[in-house]
Image 1 (cartoon, rainbow, N blue to C red):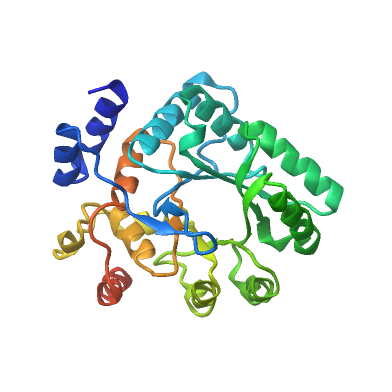
Image 2: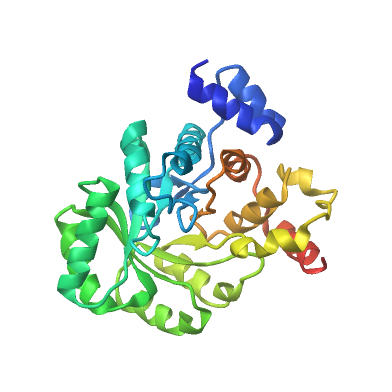
Length: 304
């Protein structure tokens, strides 16, 4: 057993017997995947966000656990890493660590553009390419629809030239969802990234169904509502029926509820702690809740 497998096995110790047995016998369990509707390419249902946690600058001590997080994430089968030029040094830190670990070909790297004007947008995106150390970006997203018309034209051209593989839009404000809906109907985007969790369900009203019907992949960010959900359940037990879908922690409970929605392609919890990455990724293994179970989960959480 190589070192990365030993590290991951140690981290997965509390995340489910099927995990431990699989690794112990040299058989890596396969993380569940979802198809990107526009191409049919499969991507694991649990990814990794870099907001705040990867803003480590050049501090070697601060980077060390992030390196372990990336190694364990990839070893477990995770692929999507989402970043942004607005996340401080996160793009540079992720790019450096991915290069050090030799993981570029194993990962799906996504970032964003969030500025006005064609030339400023191009400059910002070129900087992201350099920071993330990529020649081709897997996914470029227009954040909060800022100057979406201008950037969509640029990125459709870049997609045709294979500079990017996929094009998406994002928004984190529910009051803007009507505008998001207009853009989804007006342009052919591959991805939409929005807030979605048991604590933030506004996107269920229309956007998720629109994406499902129009072949748009959905990335769910803020899956823990920036930690508010953990604060709500602190000291409270999981429901006795959680084991029916292989849930062994609140993180898995929250994430399985999200990826159990048929329109959701990938959830992107962020963490800078190696001990948390295995718990998050474990939500991508085993059974998913069906519609009835998701209602039961929502009712349980809502009553806490």
